[in-house]
Length: 309
Image (tube, rainbow, N blue to C red; front, side):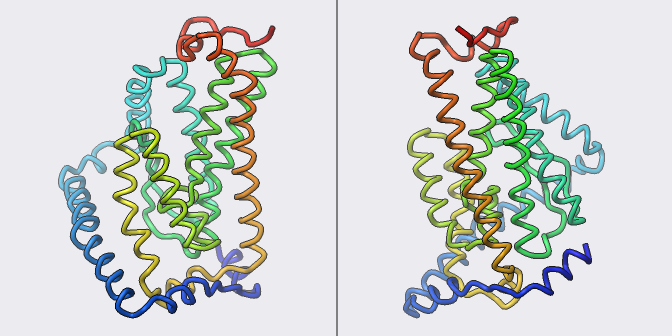
């Protein structure tokens, strides 16, 4: 921990001025109006909801009575049972396994930086949540934490892809495309998604295009969960228009080399995931759809069909 912190302090700092410069261009009346809107949303909705939820959880004492591994395994089994009603047992088990690999990436990064985190709790149709018991020390640590999940999760999807090609398994092709999409979705640069954590080390203004991407996704999928995410993350996006404190600016102080390396890794991973999804869909999934077969029925049965001709 101390060596990482000393290394960060010894490097030439590169502090982006984009937030301050954009802020200064906003007229004072409009700036005050945005501050009032942001404060009102946070005070009237977000903070009371979170405080009420935490109060209910603490009053029930379920977290102290039930051990953490029981929470994790139990939530995994519940999620598998729920997902199996839509995608079959085989895909449900595979999906939760890939999701667990993704979350292990976050846990490994948190352990490396000495941050205390809870075990992942799996929630159907939302994914998995990890409670950060203490904040990260700086933007670089937060970005590495956010990137670790998609990197390890993409590795798990790649293993499924290799197995699919070696064994001619359509089931593992489905798992691969599910895993790639899962990690690509989490790279949307918004709020508490992995991409939102990564954007902190680049520029928080990426949350605005990320919010628009999430809104477009909600328009096409008509998912109430996505709409809830949009509502919860709106105050975070509006907070961009508030003047930032010195402590917040110091938190974002990261060397130029680290910003460039994280940006290159982020763009490279997004391109790789999008390309992999397209390749698997064109080569394996689309022919099955064209033949009139139902994808879930191909992988939920007792035998895994071959994709080789």
